[in-house]
Image 1 (spheres, one colour):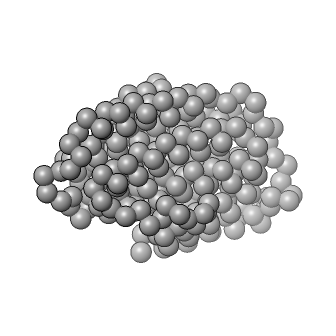
Image 2 (tube, rainbow, N blue to C red):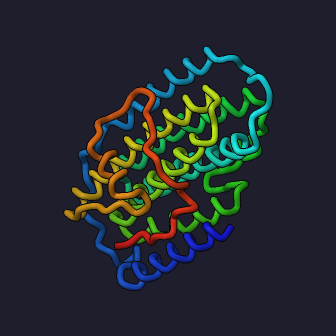
Length: 255
């Protein structure tokens, strides 16, 4: 709980500073881009391939998943939902196609994790939750704060997208270190590939939108530069090493 509290205090502080000088009603939003990176539209196809590959594994592991593996699945299905829900709200606010495109990709990410939960008999109690509603109260609070920040300006909304993807990458890398189960590894690596694609798209859009050079908020500079130097990933990606996303999310979403 402490790690979430630190993150939320800092994100609220950044939001207050931005809102004081540039509220949604007062802000003159940057010109909306009409050219959107189309790579993310291919992620659903990649996940379809992964789901087909997953079906080749035994439906039941010899023994039970570890507690960490179960916790990882429960957390990731809601974290992917958080990304989808935030992007849908930001699309409604700003009309930027990138938010809708990546939100659609997140649906396939959610489905991939749900398939694993069904295979191992893990109840998905969050499945019936409406948009913007989460069982995990820390994710609920984070969602509320991200939407608030993304409402300030289009540039801030795009920066929220980069933050979500950086954190997602770090969490997936952490959960990958906690499992040797083949189907979990396969799905997590594919989600990582998708998140790296999403991050590249958001960063490119942010830099064209603002004319500024983007600086990573949670990833190390080395990990960030390695991702940005890569190209679109359609297969199973390998994650870089890093700490857990929310645990290390103590920096602010700076202007």
